[in-house]
Length: 633
Ligand code: PRX
Image 1 (cartoon, rainbow, N blue to C red):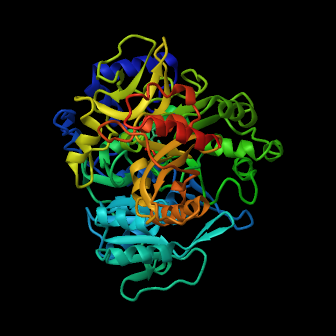
Image 2 (cartoon, rainbow, N blue to C red; image 1 turned 135 degrees about the vertical axis):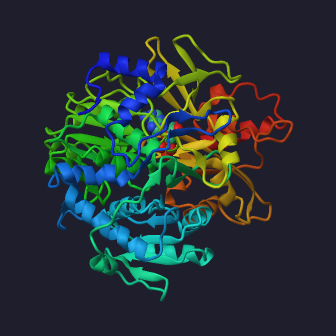
Image 3 (cartoon, rainbow, N blue to C red; image 1 turned 90 degrees about the horizontal axis):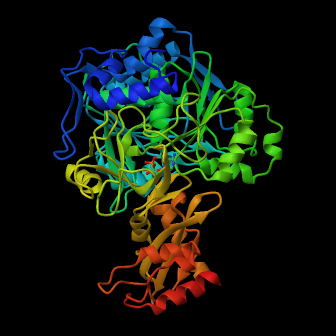
């Protein structure tokens, strides 16, 4: 495989070249892609002016790289092995030639429905093949996709549709998720009551459930696809044209729409996939992430397709019909590369050994982890019970903003170190800084993780708000991209990510901002003030605790309030942001200037009572004892 890093020595060479001769390095890498016109400049711009560009002047279409070039060489190679939610339903597979046909049909449907280059198309679907085809079809005609995870609420969907001014929403009638049926179209209808900019809704019939169709706005996707031509020329895109917008939570405000570009993102998703996973021609790769998250974009929709891999796409959940579902799929398709999140690993471990003991799993060669720090116990179980002690585990650290993997071992090429992401990929220049922004040069070190030079896959902006992009990521440590994560670096330069250092929680690998949850809680009539923190949880990694000052008039019991709040949160954000616990308290610890001391609330929630530090300078130190008493009870 062209330019794939095959040895630790070669990693060192490539890494050094990427740092010392950046432009030559990326020119060499970019040569292997299909361009309609090559670049004038490899890279320009910087973090100070926040005008980073990669491969400027180049013209391309990412789907030509994902599909057409593989179809030319090997049309019958299997691309997608689709496994339905219910194991008794027929699985479906698609070759690269068949995927191209489906994508072209979908692209023609979009065009005939009035979608043009640059328009935003929002997807609110489950993991059916049509979601993947739709995403690629959008890219083929030069429109911009924004996929919203099917577990988000109507409000959350509406917020995203409005923010990116989507012209069209594509959804299912309903979605199968384990033993549940999720009414995606009804939720879409509710969301669209709030945003009238959407001109058309395409509905993919999955369950045949009873839904209402609004005349003139809603159309059956299946019918349109059946009549569409299977030929569609890919639209020529500029390197820096937007490819997609994906929303993610931050420490303040509403979720941000990170915008990724056609060329830089393509090169990044492709290269990182190739080097980290080391997938060969006959291998079967499976990333369990939903396309609604960045992992499903870079390591399902794009990375494997760009590399011509054969991959599994799974509609269901790991625990239905029982907790052996993942392992049965691995055996059924003889999966060689398996990529999932620590929260899934912990949840499956907790279901008991009987679910894994029956599985063969001898096809597995490489395991991957993403989304949160993997604790040692989960790592051991993954290594022993799933990998049988013979599979390298790639611990891939990255973010929605980074477009693809930034720090990770390369499977079988660079060493695996338990619970460590280890080394930066070529092109990635990580630095640790202390709270004053001083760069920590010596090893070992511990500090806040920044990246101090541009890389091709980085998001270019927050859609519609470049200033917010600057403020969020480039203002804390001028001249550097601040990740929001803390990390340790050992004496050999290996990184271990310790978790978020800002007000972003990581619940089952999903990012949720404390402010987002507080905004919902504050709307409850009995709540005077609330502060939300994450605390350690066996399965979820982190769970949410809310400290609440209730109004004097409130007649609600604590149980009632807990229930009400979770109903509100489910409606406003989605079930992933539900509270684990509430503590009703007469007061919250505050500084003399009236700021809530979250640091203390986090320590109390984690039951680290002896690590509170000096509380005597607080405005109301006595509150701390009271909340400790409550948490202990
Ligand atoms: O805190 C880090 C954690 O997930 C955050 C990024 O979340 P998101 O944008 O939703 O992307 C998740 C999938 C890439 C990071 O800031 N994180 C991600 N991967 C790891 C991780 N923490 C530790 N180790 C990882 N391998």
